[in-house]
Image (cartoon, rainbow, N blue to C red; front, side, top):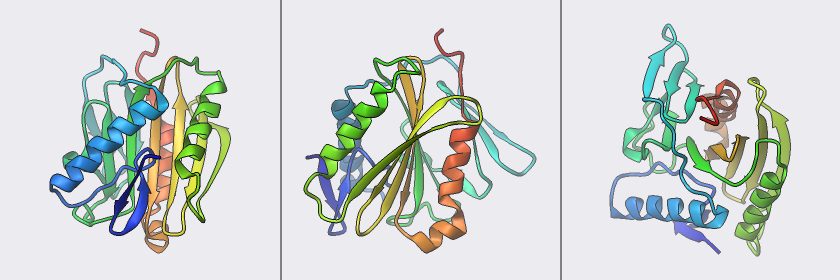
Amino acid sequence: MSVYVLNGKPHFAIMRAYICKEGSEMKSLRKTAAVVIMAAMAFSMCACSKAEKEKDEAGGDKKYEKKFGSYEVSEGWVEVSSHSNPPFYFSYCQDGHEKDDLPNNIAVYCGEDKYSADDIAFKDDILVTLNKQVEGLEGTTVTGSGITSDKGYPVYMFEIKTPDDRTIQYYIAGEKEYVMVSAAIYDEDMAKEDKTEEVAKGIVDSFEWDDQGE
């Protein structure tokens, strides 16, 4: 089981995009998370072509244009470059909380898979993997559902609850590629203030693939 311990609590490498203080421990955790995601899901990073750009929308939401596509992040949230791994992995948190040990945070990750956009076997594989990750961990549950984004893309949503925290993962399905938007919530009261769930959903609904299939 791919589980590591942080601050005395178990955390799941495949589920988390942690923003912690810099140091060798954090670098090791980020490396472990990347390996587990790629090994457990048998996916590889996607090869895309678009240059990265960022656009402010009149002082409101910021539009990010990455190599795999574009999306908007709500005002008050910032990209944390020190905990991102361009061009396929990016971390976000509320402005001013970049140096917190465990702030509520959101990660956006692009990868490849073997499935077409409408193949629900992709959802089944994710669910099997997540259930294996939490097997035997008391008080931890995984639930899932399917939705459609505002741009019309199929999206598979999973919620992982532990006694200490909660993670919501969205997988935007594409043609043999996917984008995962993962919201890690450690402080439920703060999540209501910084609107972590709404920000993550906004990323999902605003996401557009960059010339998929080319």
